[in-house]
Image (cartoon, rainbow, N blue to C red):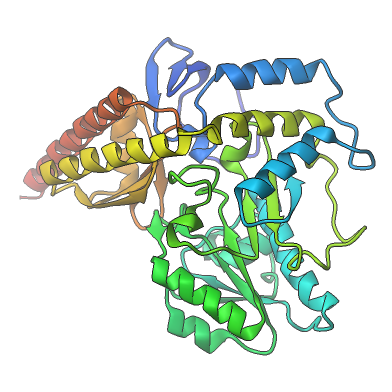
Length: 400
């Protein structure tokens, strides 16, 4: 049968009929250990009982009423996000791209409401990924996401990764702020050093501009802290969340201080579906678990276990693994072979991973993964590396 879907995804020949925690069961009955988690989305694993019960209960109440009316579920979720972070105010979206788009608009509106509408440009970083809308694709600056869509949206100035001097040189009278992922996910799990994030905060304060963090992939507990920027002890003025916030249900959020959001008055922005009762109910259920005492500490412990196991794997397969980097349960394996080959070999060993830029394979297990599942996942990756070594040796022999 010819698919009626846009042919824009290179889909694997797999379909899953059910999931259990960190596991997915294909329609042929095969079990796969899911270290992709829907690209860091299924934060609490598949079929988490609290999320399932919440969804069933919410389905018996109004799903959607629009933002023309009060939504108690969204009010509660916003209050909890404020208590857990730097923020004073929250705007709900349906995706990470929309959350980043709101962050961009909030920063521009801040300056416009301060009498400086000419300050609209954001400094971004090479290797970034901020989404697929016209503005967020322009912010990311990756040519392959911009080609064929006309002139890129104006307003973004790119600096080399973590290059503070380049940022200093780019700041000018039209600069509105700096947009950065504390950990570049699609860019290959590249971590901004704490001292760089701290200096970016200083530069924003010195020049009266705003610091925006894209925490879409790294936020909501993925790194063992609620926000990845907490590792550096740096607070932004605006942050974007999504992915793990809904545990698999489409939900994003733009968080801001009251000062940064001062221009976002009635009518300045909007969303038909953002923060509707169904989505907000599930977001609250995710926070019930993630904000439970000890949960984030457990994520950090499991992350330390994963780091140790991957270091052992790197020592066993130096011909395949170049390096390992990451934080919490967000790791990247930089491979000497094509990363697609390693991801395919891992899938053959029934381990699901996610390729990224810089020839990296991402490991993003659900935050509820246990030590035995980590050991099993690394064992399957070990099999994949061994298979690739045989392939590399065979290819070298054929060349001779």
